[in-house]
Length: 251
Image (cartoon, rainbow, N blue to C red):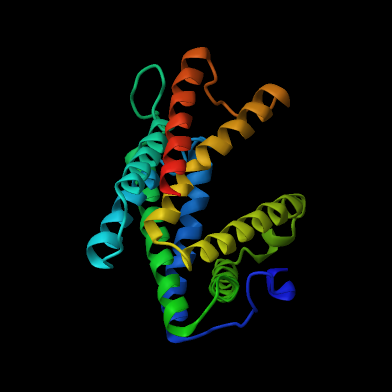
């Protein structure tokens, strides 16, 4: 849709050597996300990812020599702390029990990928003029072909057309449309700001997720197993406050 309308840039597939070398990493992180989504609560996903802005701040300031004000640095730290707080149990003050070493390793893998992807896009954008639409369309097309080849190699192609897959297709279509929109808009932001600044705003995800979870679990009575007692809500509200304050400071 973005490519057809040209709202965020013209769609021009780019299949240079860099894209081919990057594709295996994209395939691996797709498989990692499948594992994470099966084993981790909604608000705990990305717990280690909230440390990303601190890492990217170091890269941007020391390696890329990007200038930041004191307010922006404080804002990034506040966003990180607020995001981490969402991964801590409000009563025990410890990481939630699902944060095993396997889960932490998977999250660390996605953190590494997100950082590499962000800097890789900035490189492609500045060197070849590849916009966000073209970048993700090229990477995702190559990754999809690789995943389909993997499914075929394992002789599981029939599972793509069974009753479960057909019921799942409409939901994943909506999910991936939103995912694609988020990725393209993030790429647009990356073309105008430092990676650490853009990454810091991703820590606002728990704030949005909390609102969705409260509505789904209390309003729609869906069983999401999220702790929403008064103690937990006070803790999560304080974390949300850090996120909002950090977001205002980073602007």
